[in-house]
Image (cartoon, rainbow, N blue to C red; front, side, top):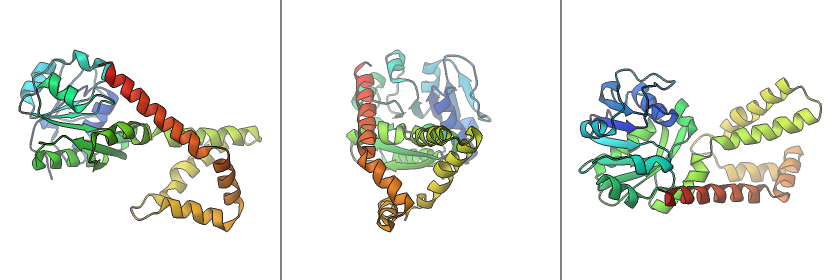
Length: 266
């Protein structure tokens, strides 16, 4: 599907807005000429968006777009002054409720989504939620837009989006954290840092492809390794016994709480 609407991205010069725009154009999902990108300056993002129109005027963007993507920090949302009546508004802001977006912009068709940093390489898993009343045609556009950044997935409740701020929105940083822990322990045992970094990346980015497929069962992989009672089982069981699951749960809870706090501040 090629999107034939005009999409305006407020914050389109920032890293996430730029990533969404460039992925949509690179995938052929939308022609660059149908994109309007606004930002506080004329600075272009790191990725090229051929044909896109740039502006510093959000009102001009809103007037010229059929669909508006709000891609600004939640704390900056109160400064966004646009009339989106009759338009679809897609927000990628953490913590800002759909009703607050509708009240401020005048839009009645509102979608909330949580992409992550992997959108820059078209590998973001992006949950999205549409308020009742969003048309099927607009839902299809949302799905296509986020599929162009990796994979979009609709959730049935807005609360699920608030939870996913931590699980998927922050998730691109979690493998990096694991890699850092692996590197730190390896170097503490005397392994060269350059080797440890290569090895950690091989584990986190390479070996993880074993469960990248849709049919892969991560629970079965873990349990199978534990049942084998070998060296991997010893590592896994020790991590679990020392609070691995609890540490992850507390991190996700903290991310959701931070998102809620950001939303209340708008």
